[in-house]
Structures are given as structure tokens and as C-alpha cells.
Length: 481
Length: 101
Image 1 (tube, rainbow over the protein chains, first blue to last red):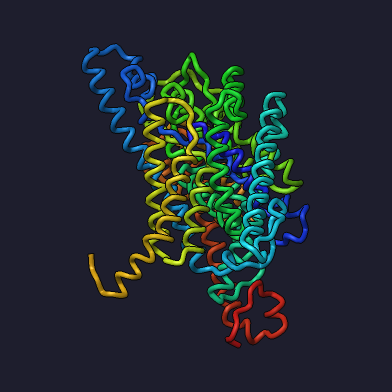
Image 2 (image 1 turned 120 degrees about the vertical axis):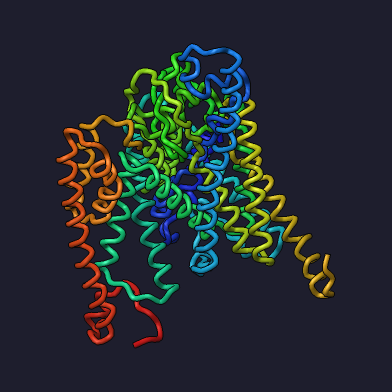
């Protein structure tokens, strides 16, 4: 989301919370294991380029380049217009691919590995009320309570993050993120591998397993938090988002999950757009300080070489800064894990958020945060460089997680298998398109969750309850429409 | 991280760090090193740091090959003889398949 950073963080926090480690019986551990995952990271999206449809924005968006060179005005504008257009569509596609990949991974896992749909009776510490109750009313009440607890945790986490950021406790935030990604990359992937091997009835010895997990984890940490090839970094971000989403799917009971999705979208909307929203405060603080935000869990589609804008330093953060043209310039720096100084925007926000969550959740993990760290952009950006490199579009990891969670839940629990899953998938992509379009129009951070999740939920319930019986009846009577 | 934008010394430094870190039982890191820096080291026109980079990439490839053979051999042995090893095989196993002896 453009401003998703906030949301992302919140999500992350929630996610973190939700991610109780397998043994939920141990609340502390559970909290610990919550993946702070990038839920927070969600903030990030925003089409950097697309946004600038406006005449003025185009030059900004495309970076300093056009303005830097003296050119014929009309041609410039035409070219800029065209360039903006082209970039816009391209960036939308650039975001489609990772979101789709993440969803595909989650759905494939849900369908094949039974572990993630099996109800072990374990719950996250954040959702203490069971849903196997005698009456429907009791179940409804329990799920509402669960959702309330989760959202409260997330809000608190976000606030802690904002406070940490305000009082410059950067080390805390970074450490938190680091721990989070550590937990995510090692522990959750270990569990995932175990379940996959069990499903396919493959023998595996400890030695090979240790080598695999060790390699996966260390290279992941390096790519995310330090420097690594862009494609590999994107792949890792997708994988950890998928892992997070799987944990959420496993440990959140049904009604709670749907409620949480709805509530998080609303919260995202509020946190990013309201003047007093924590995410917005974070973004503005980062801007005031003109400093890079910890690259948080933000997925960036391309590396953007920073083109620093003199005026605005936009926090890259998770917010979908993408939309903003000015942000793009700044954001570019942020968005791409360029060698240049780290973009403050992206990372910072989510990190703090995550960190907070981590704190709240427990001693363990803060995967989210680590993710945020990933997009660390070097702080010392080179002076403005005209670079007509594409601006990367950034989307927070939290957004990835919740999208995948919605589609995964749909595939896990829907009675009509593939229709519902596909409907939700299409709904989310449509929502993403609309969000990016809005980003292009408004050119400021926007929450990426609300529109997509709303469409997804509507499509899920409509398809499950209306379309499926209709199709069944048609098939039964061999009536083809 | 876009290599294009980095100055040559930094590229060399990065290649070197990846190479050195790979000694911590990280063949995957060596693989990343080889794939990522291959074009830089072998396909680009020569520059001062390139010779150094070539040695790093070559050594990473060697290390990768070594690890690959070791792992393949071990996995083959393990999968083939696991059942026969009885208790030791079970002790070494992380997951034990159902059904087959």
C-alpha cells in the first residue's frame, strides 16, 4: 500500500502475533515465534511510475532525468506522458507477478501438505478463544473477541514502533527486524521442509537437512539485510511472505481469520490516511528528519538507483510510496536496495512497526522486521543522478501476506475448490490494480489492503454461497449456459 | 542490488566477501557468487579488478563442485542403505517414510 507501511506494520505485528510457534501450548514461545513478518511490509506498494499521469508529476516521477535536460517542452511532455503511461502499466504487471507467485506457493502448499489445514487444536496466544463451541452465537462472540485482541496487539505494536522511531531507537528496531527474519528464515522453513518431506514420504537425514536449512537461512539473511542479487532478494521476500501466510492460515480459526482480514483492512485505511494515524506519523517524521527509514519489509520490483529529490525525502516505508512521484524520486532511493544510501522510507517504517510487534509478541522473532531491514538502502546517496532506470514499484510484505492468506484460506475451506480460489485470486488482482491506479492519481502513500481484501471477501462469500450451488444445480441437470 | 551501478572496487569487494563467506559450509552462497558475477568476470571487457574477480569466481565454482559431489554421494549412500542400517539409520533420519522397509 502506498501507505501500507503502516498497515503493513500493523499487519506484521499481528502476524507476528499470530505466528505462534507450533507448540502453542507455550504461550511465550508462541508469541515469540510470531512472525513479525512483514505484515508490515505491506506498506510498500505504490507504483512509482504509474502515478504520474499529471503533467507535473511526470517529470517528477520519471525522476529528475527529464527535467534535468533542457528539451523542447512539447515533446518532453508528450514523451513524459507516454513514459509515465508505459511505466504505469509495466509496474502494475511487475507487482502482479510476485503477488501471484506468493499466492501460488501458498495454495500449492495448502492443497498438498495436509499439515497446514489440519486442526491440531493449537492456537496462537493472540487468539485464545476456541471456535469449536456448541452454539453459533458463542462461536461468533469468540471470533469477535479473538479479532479484537489481535487488532489491539497490532495497534499497540504499531504505536510502539512509532514511538521507537520518534525517539530514535534505531538499534532496537533493527535488532528486532533481524531477529524476526532470523526466526522466519530458519525455524519456519525448517517446519515447512519437515511437513513437505512427510507429505511426500521422503527420508531425509539430519546432515543434509542441516546443510539445506543453514544455506537457505544464511543466504536469505544476506540477501535481505545486506546485499544480494535483486531476483534472489525478491524470491526470498516472496518465500517468507508465503511462510508467514501459511502460519496464519494454520493457526487462525476460520471465523477469526475472516474477521481479522476485514478489521485489518479497515485499520490499514485509518492508519494510513487519517492525520493522526500511526503510519502517517511515521512517514511524516521520517520526512521531517530527512533520513532513511530502515528498509523494512518492502518488496521492490526493481532496483532503483536513487535519484534524490531535493525537496522531499519521502520515507519509503511501507506505505505505498510508490504512487507518489516525488516519492519516487526519493523513494527510488528507498525502493531499490541500491548500493546508495538506504532509503529511509521503506524500511524504517515497517521495521519499527515490526519491532514493536516483536516486543509485544514476545521475545522471539521479528521476522517482519528483518524483512524491513532488507531493503536497507545505503544512507549516503550519491547526488542526484539522472537515471532513467525504471522506478521500482514497492509493495509492503504485509500486503503479500494478507493477500496470500485470503486466497489460501479460500482454497483450504471453500467447498467448491478451484472456483472460489480463482475468484478470490482475480478479486485481489483487480483490487491491486485499482489501488495502483489510485496511487497514480493521488500520488501519496495509500493502503494496499482495503480494496483488495474487500473484493476478495465479497467474492469469496458470494462464490461460495451463491455461485457454487448454482453451478452444482446446472451440472446436475446437465444444463449448459 | 544492481551491479551496474557499483564501482569496480565495490564489485570486487562483494565478490570477495561472498567467496570467503562460502567457506562456512555455504555452497549455495558460492552458487550465487558464480551466477551473479559470471557476466561481470568473464563477459565484460577487461578492467583492473577483473582478474581478481575471475579467480574468485573460479574458486567458488570449484568449491561448489566439491560440495555437490560430497552431498550427492552422501545422499545416495543414505537413501540406499538407510533401511539396512537399522537403528543407526533411524537415528540419522529426520523423517522416516511410512510403509517401506
